[in-house]
Amino acid sequence: MRIALLVALAMLAGPSVAPADEPVPAIGAGSRVSLEYTLSDDAGTVLDTNRGRPPLTYVQGEHQIVPGLERALDGMHAGEEKKVVVAPADGYGAVDPAAVTEVPLELVPADARVAGTQLVARSPEGATRLVRVKEVKEQTVVIDLNHPLAGKTLHFDVKVVGVEPAAKP
Image 1 (spheres, helix red, strand yellow):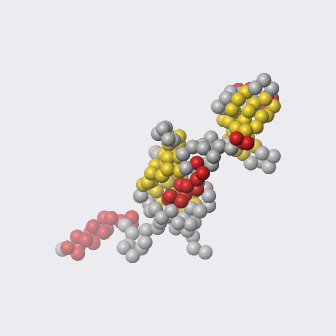
Image 2: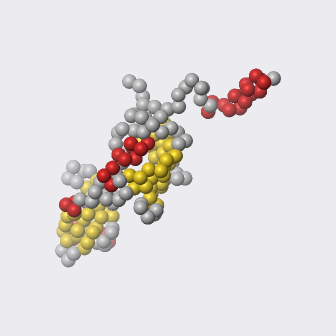
Image 3: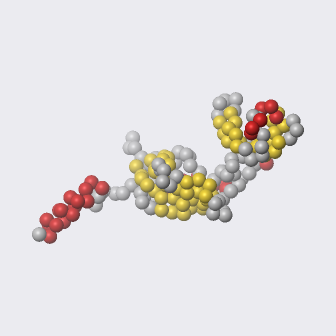
């Protein structure tokens, strides 16, 4: 009777129960990771979140997320949650005062000539990046090329949704 009950319970559990001898994958180099996250600043203001939306998926070790967060996630398993504080040096870096430039007024669309407006700039090679209008002068617009989160301490509340081990060569 007891064996039949154990077999019945195992059948009800279905395929989501991993065999005891099969290790649960941990985040490591080359793992494909799916995350839920909420990003806040020092004041607790939510800057970004994907809660209630599809998870963020990245490959560990390929520098697709900020370095401080990537290091903090190493070794975690699906279902685990963690609060991670990332200093500017391990996030988007310090604010670089040299990353401010002036461009002729006519190069900025009229409706974007307002301090704080975010624009997408394109380099001669075709790469794009977010920039912000810092100041509008009579003949020029001062553009800040720093990442909007440069110089900020980042507070992540993360949940690992899934971990797929690195493909074996």
